[in-house]
Length: 250
Image 1 (cartoon, rainbow, N blue to C red):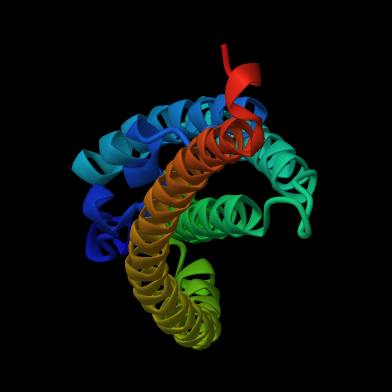
Image 2: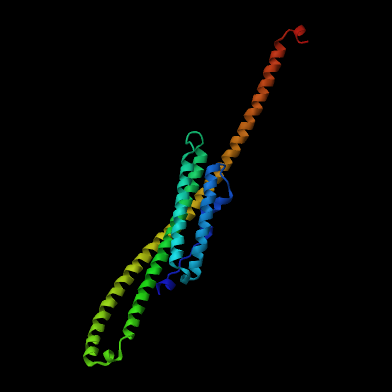
């Protein structure tokens, strides 16, 4: 069955948004929503891992739970965007860029889980088709013995079965081709999403390192300027003292 043939895997190592979870940006509002988002993603991962281990655990309630978690995560992501955009480009451009990079990484991560949800829905549709075919077979087996052994009924049934088999075979082939096309497209999008996620993680890590270096440089410059200011004040006091007449110095 389709549900046992298509295995979808995911790895938290590619989760750049999750990697940022343990490092605060210094922006209280953004860090709060980032932690909330990461917590919701972890809940989602638990459900998806259960599906990956055993497709039979996917019920209507499971699909409803996944949908609810994705919806909640989307709302949290919008809060992240608002907090990032609230930072002034002119007053604190480095911090704004850092927040936007983390937001984009979280957005990529959420899109990846949406693709995984679509895989689950496709697997479930295949199971429904299989169950319908099984139901038709059971209905046929319930016919009375007199109908099964009646010559005219047997001839008519043979003709109907041939027509049904041809029609059902054509339908299955169309559905299979359509499903394979969708799976191929989804897998391609999933690979692209994971690749973009890795690239985003690398870029975000580089930018974070550069920003930290810039902050250290700014702090050192600020300290140097304060030291120069103190020395200037001392020099001014000394010059002022030297300019006084000798009897006024006492």
